[in-house]
Image 1: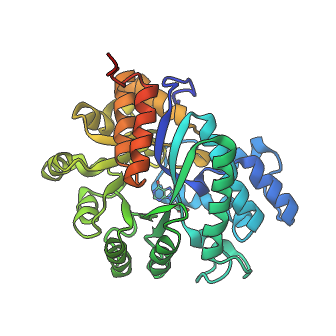
Image 2: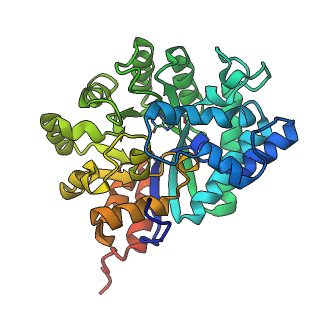
Length: 361
Ligand SMILES: O=c1[nH]cnc2c1ncn2[C@@H]1O[C@H](CO)[C@@H](O)[C@H]1O
């Protein structure tokens, strides 16, 4: 059904939209469950994988329910939280990613100072603040071991407006410690218009110069994208497939060089787009030379890799090596690193892609 894991672009890549909690190794879930004495419905990687993954195109709501199959194992466990961050960096390095921005909700991994307590956990002592510190530790160790760069984006959740104030405060507190932006994730189909508390958090982010991305136009209409841009002042759009349904908006965003974080394999399985990849809105973005990235989103639940996203657009949408280079340069230009580091990243990509002009004479 899916394109294979065949490596169609074996060059350094940038990934800007991937959920840490949607990118955990199944083996790690099993290990941690065993150590903590948590009973799972399966005890082999193969069986547990079958339980967690989405096999057929579904809905975003069904997809989001999948997290409940394993999040209670990792949440509230210091060692596990640090471990998933470290392993994430290793997995990305193996895929040839040299810079990644990963995202997560600190509240979803906590078991203290979070109301309501997620995943039917009992109260513990790991706060959302502890979660950010643990993830940062895991990422830093991973960066040293695997020699790539990883930065994080903290997610507000659409259905949990009361958490958003904490999220922006955590972005401020850890901005010099690897946290580069705020996001708004969750079910756009149930909760379309951004709640005032999300708006307030984004206003505070703007005031403090915190970068902003928003999940919009994934399964929701183009009006959600418009709101993300006009009200939340998003600098990037997570997904944004439905933008093309509003031509005026689409043209304006193209003119403004808006970055779209596209996730092809995800968009099929969440039901965001037509399962026939030859009708995919990404083709329009590609033909218009739009500013977008290719991303996995939640490789655990889609049973996918970044190679699969690349091979999907290559096989079904006619993406070329040239386009892969161009979109990775666009991704680096739209990443949330400070200017100097962004320049270095762009330089590394251009060198690897043979795009550096020889100025020696
Ligand atoms: O494709 C998506 N659309 C909207 N929300 C998502 C998607 N993937 C994951 N999450 C949500 O973001 C949370 C923090 O990482 C995840 O726990 C999940 O609820």
